[in-house]
Image (cartoon, rainbow, N blue to C red; front, side):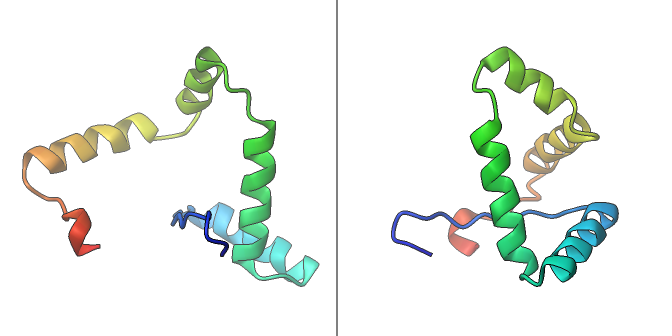
Length: 85
């Protein structure tokens, strides 16, 4: 990774993980390399208009519920300090 890069860990559901693995196998590249390329393309094509980003976020299945769970976890003290990561 170059000096300006940032590391990001993403968890895929089983269906998308299998699809990524299949694509990586067919193209003879590592899954991480393919995922990075696909994410880069998606980000380059993303429309930065706030109203469009809201629509994009609303389209993520279970995103609101996961965010609510995160708030509940934080309130209950079920968190990990960034220093511990």
